[in-house]
Image (cartoon, rainbow, N blue to C red; front, side):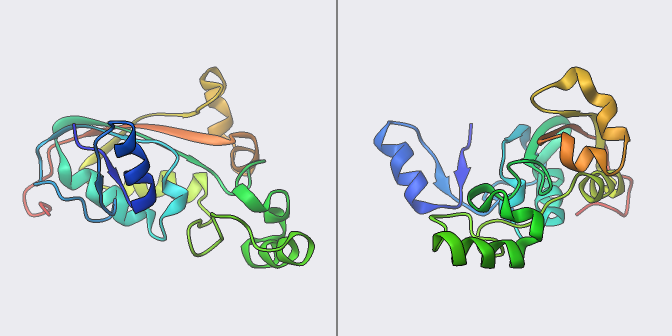
Length: 178
């Protein structure tokens, strides 16, 4: 098992509790291509400026038949703005400005520094356009029996709260190998 976290303070805190890990960017993992059986990526996609690069990297490191469990808090959900909730509904820039005016500087997860608006529809489109990844399931993480919500544009962005995708690595056609 390889644990990766981009925040050095979080890696040190985990090490203090005998939890191993390395400081790494999910867009450039320190792992050879095609050797990982599974990727567990919980609530981090909204913390990268480029979800497409994370998906490319998941595709690169997974072996054929490997799986990925990918979840994130989508922007328009009740907790999408993390520390600046509920002002995130004004948009990331205006919401942050309103938060700062009323409450001061957020303690962490500042939009466009450590939090980026991440949406269900565009993320599903990214997965579907990845030649080496197949979408096995897409559900609201906290109430998976209500998977129908993800089929309704607009509603899925606010009612899902946290989106969960189950992916499988498929053989890449010749010429598309990365």
